[in-house]
Length: 499
Image 1: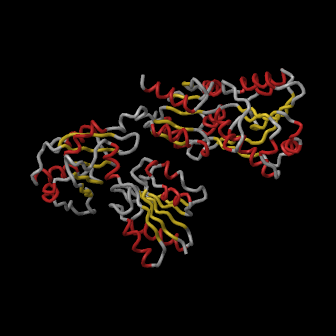
Image 2: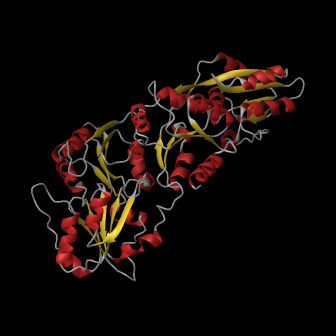
Image 3: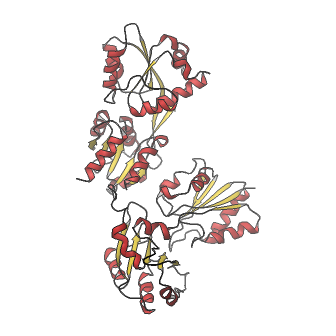
């Protein structure tokens, strides 16, 4: 028999998804999700998993609740591991209990993985502590959403009497009624209140006013769902405690084009700086196999004195090929290793080897110039790299009469299933920066998008000169890091947006 796991996806920031929730998503056979679950969390789903969008969001349920309950039951009865992915927490106004009732009636195993609720996290991202010993010792969480055909049923007198912080979820449309009800129950018009739109996300907007003025201010500012209402004296601390809106890249939308397996470091650090990150991996590496040239090269490693690797992907493919040949890193002990940059050197070090040579400038020209100085007469060089690599490296070595073999070990594929979505974002001017860590990522980005796409509406953040050259050839406006490292890219971007 299958199993259903209810997973709270949190308030929106993908970093707030719990470790246990993340693992459940990655192990799922079927994922049933609401529309407000963020795309970065949805990207964790296995490629082979069945994905069912039940489209559930405030005041819009294209798949009725009873049918969602049946879907969970049906998929579990097919012996599937089913994840029901819900925004926020499963049991806090999430109807998680209703979804378990049918499963319990049929004896279906289930598990609940709580999520971080927006009732606490969104105020925290807005600099509002929901409790503070100098202001209040209680917090009350109330739904501002009534069942269809009914009116709000809130005991405003009790809420005012308890004098705690009030957090209303799903309350954008009902905020004027809520504030009026609080004032009629005796709350002062001057009590601080706040409305937080798209909380914990880079597009978060915060409106702090008073109970008597907030409804009109919301109308003027055009606040829309998803948003939460907070009422209480702690809202007055927002300016002093606001850490999120002051992040250096807050409000900047950045698309990251690195391969999915290597995007983590750059993506995570951009988010830490406040950027809205869109993961758009548009290149994949595929090991070339069968591959007689590499078989012959590995069989005659003792004839080579230098090994050259030009990407972290090349390191990973080398490890795979050695293992397939029943060899390991010990077979490279007699060789010196040259790599193109810090990223490749780091990946090599993860497998227990240190690079003997890394050029000061991380590109093919400087790698070639270094090898020409270092390779002694009579020594041979083995280069393991992409099927279509930059031509400068072999050309310069040949001109200098350095003996080498250039063996392709992987090919680069250019593709992304979200190309239509990216094209639409570009057309809307919704992307500020696109990061490129190699010329191949530029090529992959361009080739993944429809012909005629306008590449002038964003800044291409490039890791080095060769990447910049490729971006400019595509008509992009460029910004290039001083050094070919992720650190330098981030520093350059921050400097650009703090001028």
